[in-house]
Every structure is written in C-alpha cells, then in structure tokens.
Image (tube, rainbow, N blue to C red; front, side):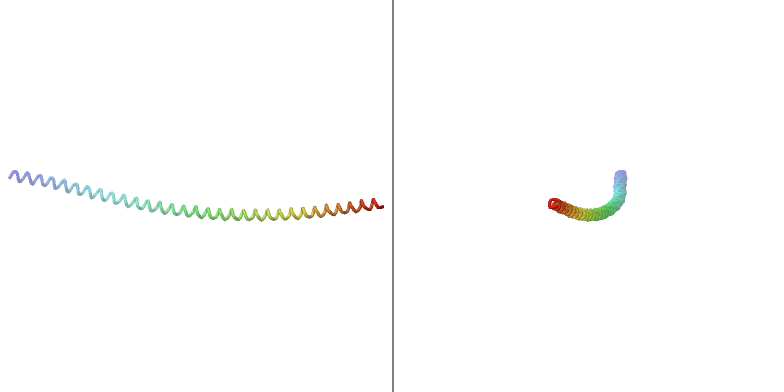
Length: 114
C-alpha cells in the first residue's frame, strides 16, 4: 500500500503541476488577448488620426494652391494693364513728339521762306 500511496501522491502532484501550468497559460493567453485588443484599438485610432491629418494637409494645400493661382492671375492682369498703359503713353508721347517736330519743321520752312 505504501507504493500505491506514493504513486497516487506523485500523480496528484503531477496533476496539480499540470493544472497550475494550464491555469498560468490561460491567464497569460487572456492577458495577451487583452494587450492585443488594446494595441489594435490604438492602431485603429492612430490610423484614423493620420487619415484626418492627411485630409487636413491636402485641403490646406488645395486652398493654398487656389490662392496662389488667384494671386498669379491678379498679378498677370495687373502686368497686362501696366503694359497697356505704358504702350498707350509711349504712343501718345510719339504722337506729341511727331507733332512738335512737324511744327518745328513747318516753322523753320516759314522762317526760311519769309
């Protein structure tokens, strides 16, 4: 009977060790599942924030691009108006100079004749 008691005692100890190992394993698996779930939620939140920031950057760039295009168009329009004004002023000055030269030549011819 002593051997039977010894074997039963050893089997009980082995059974307790196996059950303890299973319980510790289950606890660790549960902890890992919890950590995995929280990491997945964190990744989803980061992805959501990144998408939001990318959208904001894209929208800001689009607005700035539109503003730059508008400024360029306004500047081109202003340059065109200045060119026209200068061209008109140059034409007027040429006409004035031509009329002064013609008047001077006419006066010189009359002085020479007269």
